[in-house]
Length: 379
Image 1 (cartoon, rainbow, N blue to C red):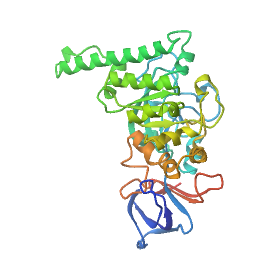
Image 2: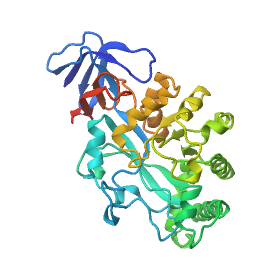
Image 3: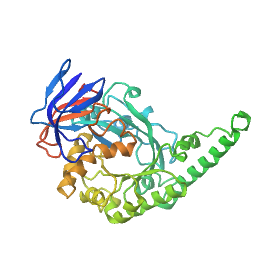
Image 4: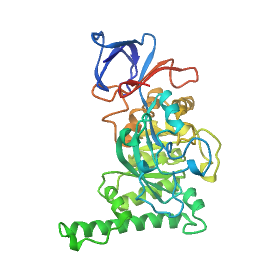
């Protein structure tokens, strides 16, 4: 057992901080309250320090886009086929990617990582902890979403074969979903009669969880028109969807507020390196949050190093985002976005003991991480 005493707790589910202790046992938060008994526990005195839930990233590619450069470290896109729903992130992740340890030591204790955005449909994402030697033992939930992409990236990557327009990209996604829908109907009609089953189709099989609403489409989209196309396709097929990047979200905030789907905003730090990023601004997450949207802030690591996730929330605050909204955007909101809020994203009894103790706040460069716990283990 571990007892964290006398800290100022920022739970991410209550706006006001509270002075309290946290008792950890078996990798879980078992009790939160004042004056908890320290009998049998290792005591960490957090007097004068701030205690946060481990920070959560809703969208990145670490473990697949390796630290450093070169072909051997790049496993986040399959460039021989624009439609690859059958690809599984866990089959490519390298747990020894140095970005994992960097993120963990900065307090990022859970993230969704998976295929990039070269493909119209790219494969499945995983929610995992950045601590361990074998990906199977690091998984929080798999799969959490099916990646698809709109806009410049598929056009650029496949412009010499298959995709030269946004219309073609959308058509390929529709085609794959329609094929999967027909395949699913045939499988269900066959029942237990193997002789009536259709020929096995790995791509369609991989999309059945999307059609069944077991996982959402995770739609890469920067421009406002691409965000609307992603939503249009999701509504056509009656699918759950999350929108990723949302660079021009502030330009259609009224539409997004009506849609009520999870939004992951970023990566915002850095140059507008392509046409569809020309309206990038740190104001976007705050504008969306104030309109009542469900907002997560993302690094899209390694585009922005994952260990800078809390600093990105600070920059959003500088541009007008409420501090509590900013904290939620890197804790409970991404946990909900990924479908793992029952385990991570807030300081609550029964949840994983993913805890960050800081001198100062995570939103400034002056904040210093003193302790990080993942599943109750100090790392």
